[in-house]
Image 1 (tube, helix red, strand yellow):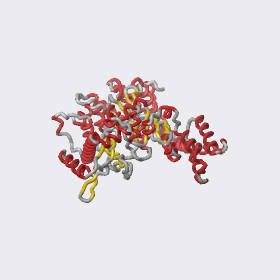
Image 2 (cartoon, protein in one colour):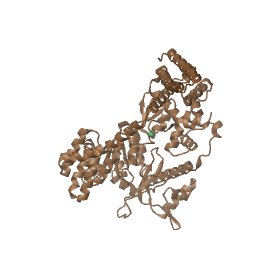
Image 3 (cartoon, protein in one colour):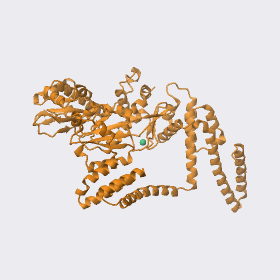
Image 4 (cartoon, helix red, strand yellow):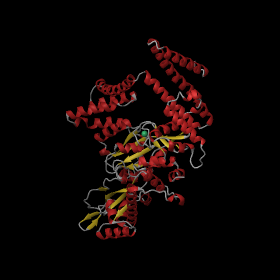
Amino acid sequence: MTLFEWVKNQVSIHAIIGGYVRLNRAGTYWKGCCPFHNETTPSFTVSPDKQIFYCFGCHAGGDVVAFIAKVESLDPSQALNHIIENNGLEIPPQLRGKLTDDGQTIKRRRRYTDVCREIKMWMNSKLLSSNLAMSYLIDRKIKKEAIEHFSIGYVPGGLDSMNSFANEMVRKGFLREDLVEAGFLQKAGHMFRSPYEERIVFPIHDILGRCVGFGGRVFRQGDTRAKYYNSRESDFFHKRKLLFGLDLAKNAMQKSSTAFVVEGYVDCVAMVDAGYEETVAVLGTAFTHEHLEVLARFVKRIYVVYDGDKAGQVASLKLAEMCWDVNVDLFVVRIPGGQDPASFLQNGGDIKPLITHAPDIFTFFVKTLGETFFEQALSDKLAISKKMAEVLGKIKDYFKRDLLIAQAAQALQVPFDSFKGLVKKHQAQSENGEQDDQVAEEQGGNLNKISDDSTQILEERLFSAILSMGSDDALLEIFDEDVINCISPKIRNLLFLWKKICSEENREKTAFDRFIDAVEDSQRSWVLKCCVEGEQSDSSQNIKQILSRLCRLHWRQEVVRLKSDIEKARHENDHGRLGELLESFTLLRRKMQIKGLI
Ligand SMILES: [Zn+2]
């Protein structure tokens, strides 16, 4: 057994992929939104039986190692190491020698997250022993449980504190350079200082819970530095994709299919403390399309919670635009009275009615637009009206669209019909674009292409059915000589290979695994697709039917070809050739009669 096989047998592909994608059961397999392409309906499939995944949208597919390699941008042996480390697998002695060098990327990432974890633990212990920092958090009603849940920390200021921490880390086998690489220390002349000194620090984790950075907040009276200091962008820290608290919130999100997005770490802590476990915070940036895509893998509803004064026009337009191509319902919760979610909750505010009555993004967009529209310059007014018509034109529910058009027309103080006309114009443009593509595609095809396509589709179905059955009876049916000749050579060879592998004895690997190993790289994705399709439909009953349709299609094409050759031979008075062709034609008709096709 290879190390790859052993690892694959030790872990559950469903559990590992479930760490990245929200999967729902659908019969014997699981379905979710693909993490590799942007989609509105789930086409990403995981089969625990076959231990594979396949996406019908972007055709990504393979085993658990291939998934990790793709999602974490690693090569296969790095991905293998990643799985071994993250699942704490103890490799049996006989396989240990087979562990290949894990490459630089994974070593660097490992070292980086190890350093961040040590820093996090040190900061957390410093917070618990600092009266000043603790009293600030207690004032803000942040409880001890929350401090532990989010591993909140504090960095005492001063050169001595930095030196003693650096020395402690050196004793643990880290270098000062590691602390610099993690963004914790900066060189200032001959000294090392930290931008996090005298700040409350919120560790930031990736979706799997590995510490990858920090957000530090000032808290002392008179501290004039920037309110927040966040880790710099690096190979392991991307603000546009990371969300504070996601690793802790994702299970609750999966259960309720809901997420709350706030703007600050303290807001996030306060929301979770108030019972909204599904809350995450952006890292000092706006809510991005990348964030939306990450959350859309787990939830159907997202509530963006804004401080009342920040929920402006620009923000709402951006959110409305982002929702076009992602299949989630987005709502906007506006905290009243110039408060942020944390201060609102701490002052005894009840956020529940705000959530219950939160407008969806389109309604919110129309409403906020009306509030400030008349303060705008004329050119801005025109641009806003156009943008608004564009946004509303994308709404598929016509009743809701008309309702919003009425609201918008009122806000803009233009007649309903003329604004509706503008929306319709945008709608027609976008729909025409889609139709044009379709027409071009249909016109491009000809009869030959259609029959080729049908053969391809039938062969795909046949192969799916055979893989899902794996029984010798079905194989015998195909290996009737007349029938096998109706199948295209490429698929024929794959079927012979499958038959050969099924007949071999091997206890270490399933026939399917051996087959996947044996097929050419260029065909692997196609085979995986067939395999997943086979599980989804009850095609095992249909093998005979598919075969007879394939034969009929193939023989009809033969008849057309023979008839045209016969005509040609007649025209050229080639009697020898004509005799041969007529004989073939009679033979073909007999075959078709025997199979009951004519
Ligand atoms: Zn995909």
